[in-house]
Image 1 (cartoon, chains in turn red, yellow):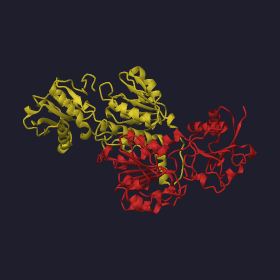
Image 2 (spheres, chains in turn green, red):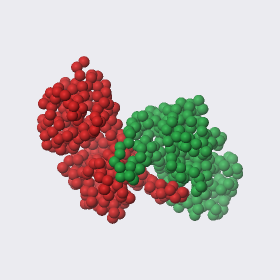
Image 3 (cartoon, chains in turn green, yellow):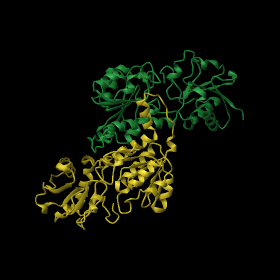
Image 4 (cartoon, chains in turn red, blue):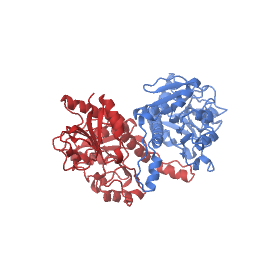
Length: 316
Length: 316
């Protein structure tokens, strides 16, 4: 069977996950994949499909016969930054159930850490002290999810399944059973006022850049907790630090940052109320993501509509 | 309306949760509760219902007209230890959705802590180091729940809902959709061999006392993790410590102990692979538990069969 030539273009050193992608995508397509791992792309004319994650600027413009760009992450802000991004090629993203499930695990883990006063129990263990902390009823701990796409929907449903009152906010209206859905600028204040643990899973767009500032954080109830597993660019760092230091926020867990890797001198690393993780809330997993890529390649070749396409104007 | 005289007998100092129970049970019954908080029981003859948690030995024998004993915890081992426990009075336990939900939160939190290598990320934060740990697919992390009663069933379903392959073991056969159910002595080895994170929610009975010993732990795969949120009496402490020290187990989270409070000199407090919490996985919550107590009081008065009754011979 004729192999399909696919370019694999990521910021990762040494080929990244290209071997797993070659195998998993080949299995999902039922045909061999001739993977061209950037920068060793061979005859650029052969390539019709590119898998990209933080591709170097201009790299995607190198393929004259490119017909499909696949974002290897669920966010696509990394692609839209490229001034030479070919204008007419459709962009789709992976839809990775494995990654979505991991994002939910991450949010649930850090929300439970706050909800169940785990840091206090850890301190008691260090002091060899048997001490029961005050109890907060799950029904009294309100979870608010910003962003109700595929990830936010899964996160919201899983919190609801654990018994937490759960609400969501999105740019456009959504309807999710059992979840109070707010939307748009007009819905933001009510959403924030009813949120004890705020989980950010918004895409990074011009509208959401710097959106999480002192004004927004000030609308959360006193003592609220913040979890960012979306993009660091949403956050005005100085404002977040001020809200933590004033006691308005009780803490924050941050997986994403304005600069990654987070510089060693950044105050987040040592702030007593901040937990830092190195952008690991959800990792793209070829095992679970390959099927959606293969599906789109088949659709492309059959002239059928693509799925999980990106609206470049909206930025997601 | 005639108040009902109820005895509240617990090990707690200063009345424990008696005020909340008086109010919540009164609301659930739709009639006032004349709560007699041990040891100030007034005229013992008035009392027909006793709410008990670790009642002093002989206390329940003090009420000549007692018709119902309610365990304020889901486990009833604390009652069956009393040599003077009236033999013919039915025992029921609370069925507390709030407590069950908390137990699931606890198991999920500590399982995710192990699953997602959180201690390694905490160490990296202390070193201000951006370091991604190896990735374990959720589909490759097998959760095994010992005990498939009301708590174990909820725990198992919630792990399944998060995408973990989940199995269970119980004394008698159970059937739960999507969960591999093993039972009895004959089913134990296969259950243990397929369990990466073992969660104990068994009742404490003569059969389960000391059941978690070196032999049982040895049947888990190397690197397995153990979470005990049931009873400390299940565990042979020296064997658990040996399994941790040999590297056979990668760690343990313990909420319950052979002696509670855990003595300050116990090695669990300072063991690098052990997390200790002070029996807080699930706290009885009058808000969610009162309805099941009121239901049984109405059934008692109407001569209808009680629910959530205890089989004294089985011990749960």
